[in-house]
Length: 194
Image (cartoon, rainbow, N blue to C red; front, top):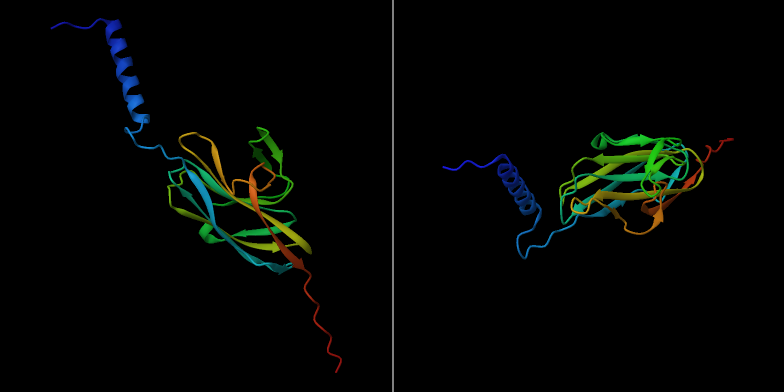
């Protein structure tokens, strides 16, 4: 029996390791590598509300085609609001105006100009629906713009995919779906003079 030299053993291990790594990332012949995509399934919220009166908001999103190693549903508001996270979305985080946020477009932290809430997940299997549910209390009258998006990372390319793919850009540089609510002042009770 011939024993291999130290150099032969080294090169043998390298060849085996490279072969295993190559086979692990290469698809089976004729099999397409699928990239993750994300879609907003629904956005439930009213068209109007009153100052100081909370309204319910639910955003549902889903990753399709392939699993994603991470992703989020993000909502930001053009005016000051109070945000209460529903128990079903307990892992969501509120970022008040003035928070530090990462902006991948400029590759730096920015100071948020708008209140934002984000439901983050470290692993988002394909076809699983995530929901972000909130109670939002407007603090000012006028039009309240709401910027909504879902973002996931494609495991193959390691790039972010976004729903919507195009649209109004939010403070972090991602395209969003924009909805506008009319916020009005509550009417004072009428005086009964009888």
